Image (cartoon, rainbow, N blue to C red):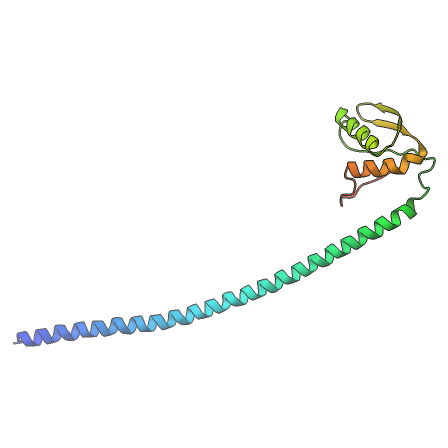
Length: 164
């Protein structure tokens, strides 16, 4: 019926068809993948550009906030002496902190006042209090020194009460 030539020709046709199918499949899938990759790459570039714009805006906002904070600090530094001038005359002043008033805190207070050339006329310490008597004319120097030593210039809110 069918000869050897027919079978060889049929097998050759099948292999050629298979090869053509593989080549077409690779070509089509390669073009679809390239298009998809290009679109994805463009999306990533767009996202990157948006993120860079957001970063620049955040940096500008941070710089503005820093400038405002510095301006507020300068205003406070200039206005504070005028606002407080004479307000503590005849008043008792207390530095209040949380925790026990141990020897380290007393030593820090004494050392700070000594470094600021403030003469301590009398000092008394209990478990919860350190009391220093100093001359009235040294009060502002003492307060500034203690304020700096105990880092009272932090941005956290501090409640202050004066007893008279």
